[in-house]
Image 1: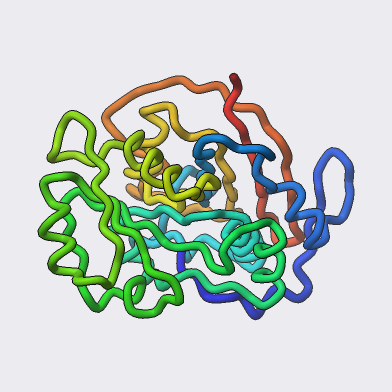
Image 2: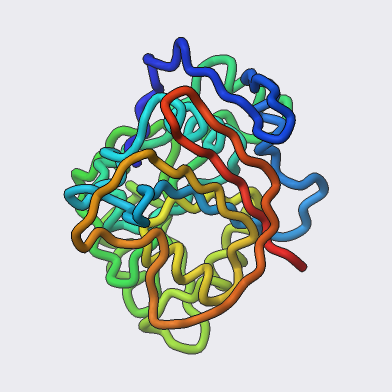
Length: 261
C-alpha cells in the first residue's frame, strides 16, 4: 500500500460493532495497541481483500482502499516499531519511507519509540534498485533483510543507502523468517507490522509466526485471477480469535484477529 499522509479523512466515521459505539482517533489507537510488556517480536499483518477474496486490482492493493482504510493504515504504522514488506510489493506499490505527523511523532515519543518507524525490505536476491523511493525518499535509513549468499554483494551495491542484515538459518540461499525476527528483536524492534505482499504474509503464516491479522474487507468484487492475501507452498490451520470488528458508512469492514494459544 502506498504511504502518503492522508488528507481526505474528514467525514470518515467508524462504528465498533457489538457496542454500536463511534470510534474516534484515541479509541482507534487503543483498539489496535500492541500487547504490553513484549519480550519478543509480535508480528501483525495488515491486508485488504475484496468480497470475493481478491487482494489486488491490476497488481496493486491500493485500488481496493478508501478513506477509512487509509485511516487504519496510518494508525497501524504509527503504532509499529518497524514496517516489514516484500521488496516486490514495495516496488509495485511505489513505497517511500513512512511519514508521521507532528501529533504522531509526539505519541511515539511518549511510548518510547523513534519518531518514524523504518521500512524493512525483504528480498532473497538482494536486487534493490538505488532509485527506489523507499531508499531515496525517507527520513530514516531503511533495512534490507536478505539471505547470507546475497548480503555482501547487496551491502556493497547499496553503499550505505540501507542497513543490510543477513537473515539466513541453515540454508544460506534463503531468508529465514525466524532469523528476520531475531534480527529485528536484537534492534529492539518488537512491534512488527507486515504489509505483505501475499508471499511474505504467507511465509509468516506457514511458519506460524503471524500473531495477528488486521484485515480490511472492501465492498467490491474483482473476479478474475486476483491473488489472495497470503500465498505459499505450505498448509496450516491456525485458529484465530476476533478481537474487534469496525464498520464505516462506505460499507468497509475492519477486523482484527489474534492467534489462539
